[in-house]
Length: 230
Image (cartoon, rainbow, N blue to C red; front, side):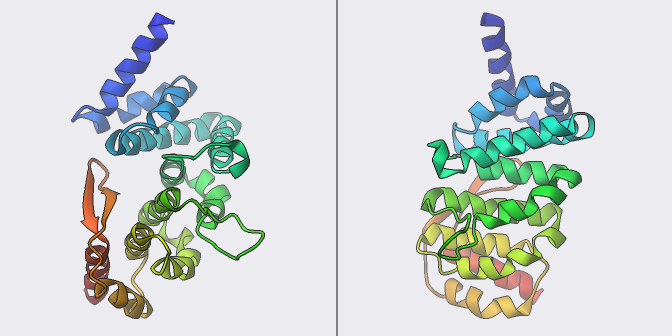
């Protein structure tokens, strides 16, 4: 037991070190042994959570090559955590879901529609995440997947545009950020302009692949408009 605690602490220290990315291959080689600890790190502070999610993505992508069913079971575990019946809030789960799909083409092919479904609000018989704070991560997750596999997220555009008017202000900013990760479409401009001009100074937590940083909702929309103009 003491050895397990020591290994978990060593993994946590690695994730939080400045050189953490150089250790991702080593963490991935740890396979299933590292899955449980990385899941537990998703409940920690934003930066640790994001880095743990990225590491879990690498672990699961490696497993998908050698133990595909084990990799799919990790995805199913994520889906269960996002299910209301699980009794879990699901902190960090959409982030990990996205990082796994970004890292693994086969898993992305099988599961990308499920990740997108968490922002699709049909009003009935849908998979929409109705927890405002958790939904912020769902928008981020789609943006993260769009960075790696934009073609798989084109169908999310309609719902990201709808997200610019989400009841949760932070969700609006996260939707704008996700939208800006898709291939540019000038038809997005009017909705982004309304958000940019709304003067919303609420801060969104974003992750640049190494560190967490903050940016206001309206600034994200202005940045998205600049990308369109470019």
